[in-house]
Image 1 (cartoon, rainbow, N blue to C red):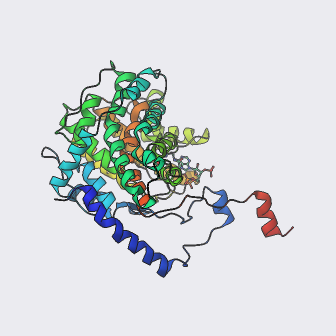
Image 2: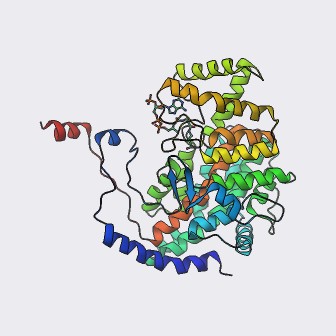
Length: 435
Ligand code: CMX
């Protein structure tokens, strides 16, 4: 069977031709109106990006290359000992639009393991970080440092033809994804354990190896959880902060390491990926204040107190989604199967019954339903990975799959440097008030 790079090499010219035709036929057509409110409102609703890997429907949720999460769970190849999809297969799907064979996925697992070593100066850099530096900051630092070995940056310096950019991009993307378990695992071991990092096993899958480095690979269920986790957090179309950052920074022809470390800095914000940490912190605080098995009434009051003190309820709401996030539902399915009686899961379920009603009554948020971050922490807690400040790092490992898939295509399709137009408020007044 073909390797991923061989298949991609066939697809690139086809896709280039397709885009040329789309632009020729539809290039002058409008995707919608842009209002002054949109310009002030975080560009919400402006259709101004092309993103091939996934499209987010407000009601249905994400589809990866046209496949829902449930379809991916069914159709993507599994490990011999597992039922959840292997994220390697999702990467193949995101890049090519095709469901790979089990053999092709196994080849990717082997390739990731073979490329996984990180330079010793990056190990030293991570080791020198104080344990008080947030894991996401350490993660971003380390990814920036991996830039040292960027194929793309070197090729650019030697004056490579721009038609070949994507080939180097591809190598960097594969290197970066492969090295993330060693980076993320080292941070975890340093900050929370004894600093000893076990080796990657060349014949095991990516999620198993990440679980091993973290110290949880003896638990098959945890490995399964990681397979699901890494699959569902990978991509959420192009406008979210981490995806858009990767695109934006990469568009300046900064290499994938620079673009992805910038994305991690965005993912580290509490309204984006850090929400998974914040959810657990918020629930623990709730337990401290109202006890382990609170009545619905006291939970409701706690939620109201959060809102009244001018804070967000973490894990709820979304800029695009208007229904329960299917990534939430997939994790809930996992919990119902593997930890139905866990007390923390029961609290998360109780919140699911109560928070949307409160947010609706509060009347501010456009979407009262839970997002992916409302459920990921409770699963990790159950398996003993209790250090919530670490959770966004796992989100980051997964997000690399989606954003780097697209970055390869950005260069293959010759997307230009991003440069939207901005106005000042004074100019807005002048334009519409005519002074
Ligand atoms: N709790 C309280 N208020 C909320 C809220 C929540 N969960 N979600 C939205 N709101 C508020 C907004 O802060 C905004 O308030 P103001 O009018 O006072 O400015 C109002 O409702 C309208 O916001 P919106 O249009 O519904 O939501 P946005 O598109 O602006 O923001 C998001 C989306 C996700 C940032 C927001 O819902 C939020 O802050 N949620 C909590 C944090 C969170 O879970 N983030 C993770 C999202 C998924 C991810 O990226 O990982």
